[in-house]
Image (tube, rainbow, N blue to C red; front, side, top):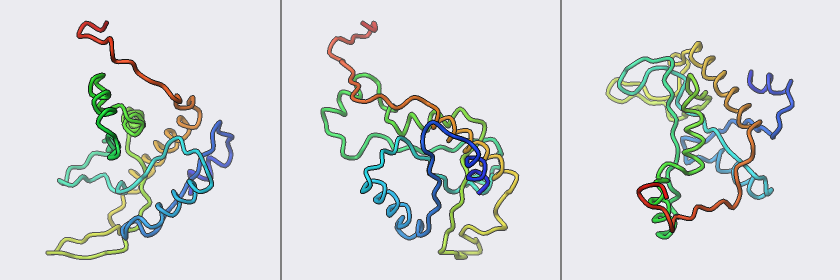
Length: 178
């Protein structure tokens, strides 16, 4: 809510949409509905930050680090055909998808993105409690990651548009860069 409040006082170069979704632990119902609504309205989405699982600075193995970035990005599209895959590998583009580029931009920021998810299937298994509960939230950490999200959103909104219809000709590349 604080991000929305701050952004409401500014005029970004690009539109910024903030969304919160329910049903994410039950087959991504909320975000799927929202994505379909944007697509059906022919909204051109240049980038997206999906913020989840960062209410605590404690990692899976118990380590605590308030300044570690955890950015996840999809690799090559599952629908990528063999010709495109071969071309991508020829030029060393294994990590050059738009999602990897976005994650790389976030990688250089001093903290992780903000999470505001609600896991509805709260449960205890073998004495371990699972679910998004208020007692697991580190509010100082969440404040820091909110600031990083704000900086990331603003930077993305002010950045030049992604190039369109760019191609790379790999027919004359050699080991010497020629």
